[in-house]
Length: 437
Image (tube, rainbow, N blue to C red):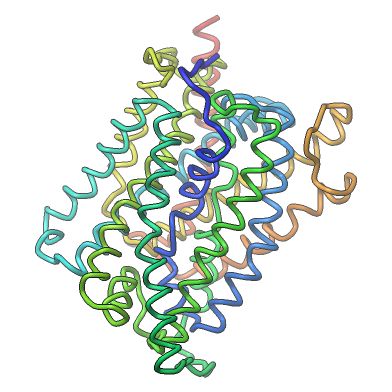
């Protein structure tokens, strides 16, 4: 059992969850460019009810009922057996290879808007590696340090957007609003806009893997899910409304364009602040996800399914071998493009998420008397229906990403081949278990 030198309280848990899911408006630009303002706002307001809310409810129930290190891996293993538990862990860790590469990539895209010479050639890759290294060193200080640091980073990284909203509002009041019309261009990619929306709202279950490092998890997990969900929705919609009313054409938005919008609204100083906040945002998100995802190899090693060396921890209770191993793997995917990363990520993460919803329903049947401090409202039918919205959205996102490619191979086929490696991982994991016996 992993013992932490300190427990993460509610506010740091909210901040860490915020970074695991969102980290700020960064990443919304492709939704605006692909859907336009009105449709982007509609996506950001509607998708959470079919994607984020069911996931947050599921996490609230299972994390409070089974507050164990390893989170969703433990839920699936307990409900469906060790084979499916390993599949859940494999899908999540495989998805992380592509998901974690997105944040350093976004960071370099933003920095290149103001300092293109800093991100040219090998410098851009070096900056991405630096983000991985800093987050790794930060995580070696423990969960409490990451949680408290996330609170500070959340305040700092959101400050430029608070200024952007206030300055835009002041200029709108004195110069009038200039809302872009709702005209639709057939060149816009609504499918990609939906995929990016889902990506911007996914990751609620990641917070569950550090349950033993959270103070009063039965009470704090449901509360953290609710508060962070409200914060994320406001962080997404308010800046969007501000730039829409200010009159910046949505067609100008692509990854990294918040810096351009800030420059148009207030000048180069705010553009610079947005870029710097973007770097902190990328670091905060990468660090928070490092905290949670590195507990999966540790939990598998605890079950005898991975080498015992992954159980090694520091004096602060940090599984340092797992942290370093994961960081190396994440660094290897840093050169993939943003769109390809999202397509692959959604396939793998979507499959793991659906397994969690199956576990929710199965545990309702197999363990009806399991103490559940928080329950998804309704009976078994509600628990089963909870996964319907996410399943439908995942299906549509897969269809929309059908033309994405990784080299000569379709991105979806590549992701399915990665997912199909799960049974092989299970055979290898069983070998470790038998060897330990």
